[in-house]
Amino acid sequence: MAIYFKQFSTAALGIMFLSTAMASTLELSSPTIKPNAKLNIEQVFNGFGCTGKNISPELNWTAGPKGTKSYALTMYDPDAPTGSGWWHWVVYNLPSDTTHLAQGAGEATGRQLPSGTAQGKTDFGSAGFGGACPPQGDEEHRYIFTIYALKTDKIELPADASAAMIAYMIKSNSLAQASITAKYGRKK
Image (cartoon, rainbow, N blue to C red; front, side):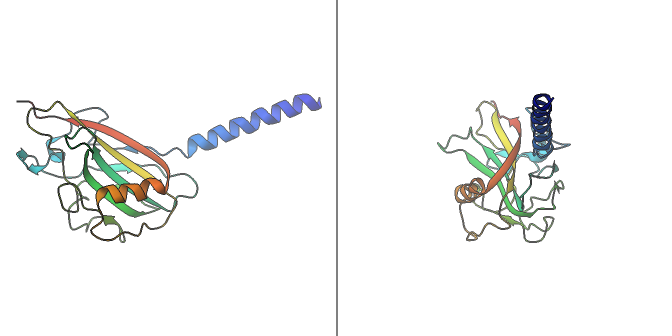
């Protein structure tokens, strides 16, 4: 009887651990971005030969795991012909009770973002959302939106920090992450 109870207890603990781990899985979703689908004209840059609306999408995520003290969000194109990809949006110091960004929250002023939130300089050279704009003739590029649950309340960085430096600090403090990938191309 004692062996049976020990085996049952071990199995029960395993199931409880698995269900707790699954409950704390970070998930990212959007009503405007469908995974692996083409980005809408709203999320396309207006400049560099592109004629989009340059509006950041609505994004929603589940609460991060235990110990989450803030969030960060990035949009990155690993297919840009730079050798290091292209940072389209870098948002950090989102309060831990934030699980939603409204469409258009990525405007340069940041006025639609929660108090204390920062937007880093993108590879377009300014803060705020910079939509998709691959070179004319390129195959579709991947645009990866990633939410990070962080173990720190605030990432301290200079205002002119590069997107790569901000991403380094985000990843150094990450507890969990979730992504949505969308695509966009400008074939001739």
